[in-house]
Image (cartoon, rainbow, N blue to C red; front, side, top):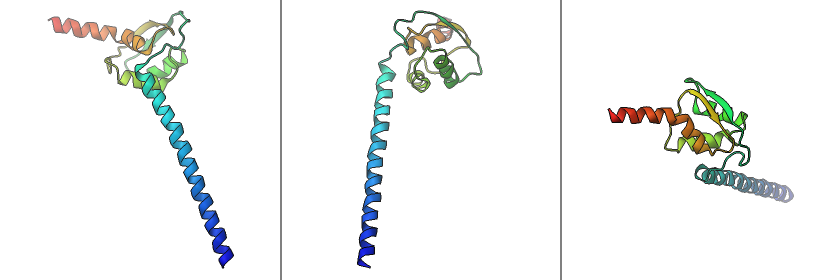
Length: 131
C-alpha cells in the first residue's frame, strides 16, 4: 500500500509538472504573438520595401475585410491577412473600403493600401460636407 501511494504521488507530481510546463510554453508563445501583432498594428512595414511593381486588385461590394486581406496576402501585398484585418480595424479608415479596381504595390504600407482603397469614400464624404 505504501509503495502504491508513492507511485501515485509521483505520477500526480509528474502530471502537474507537465501541465505547468505546458501552460508556461502556451502563455509564452501566444504572449509573443500578441506582442508582435500589437507592435505591428501601429509600426507598419511594407511587404517588400524594394518591390515597386504594381498589382491590380478588384474589390467587390460583397467582400468582407477578411476576404480583402486574404486577397492581398495571396497577391503578396501584405504579409499577414490577420494583421491586415486588425490594422484596418484600428485605422481611421475602418469600414470605409470602397468597391473598385486598384493599383497597389508591395512597397506600400498597409495603411497606405487601405487609404488608396478608401479614397473614393473619403472624397464622397468631403463632397457631402461641402453641400
